[in-house]
Amino acid sequence: MAHGFLQSFDSDLEVYSAGTKPADRVQPYSVQVMSELDINISAHTPQHVNQYIGTNFDYVISVCDGAKEVCPVFTGSVRNRLHMGFDDPYDAIGTENEILGEYRRVRDEIKQAFQDLYDKTLKNEIHSS
Image: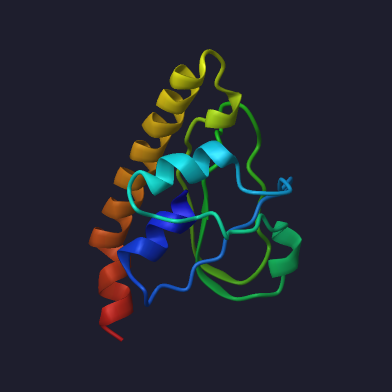
């Protein structure tokens, strides 16, 4: 979801997304709740972080739930490392409406956090060079 939001904020951003245990596909509930905001992430493909080792990045932002797991440390060349912890909506239980509610809650938290990062930091860095 963070990847989708960043791309929607600014087409000049070059965004990559990866994890240590990538799924076979983007979670359908994530696709659904993002489409509610007219952001299509259905073509995104989960990647393993190892494919980016040796790549230089301006930012590496971890978004794992720090209370439940240890976030991986990316060892490539990185100017800025940030952590923004969010609950993993994949762990939600209940009715479909309750699960979707959890996905929407986390989606909205991610949107707010990344909008703030973009507005306060990234936008100026990208458009001042």
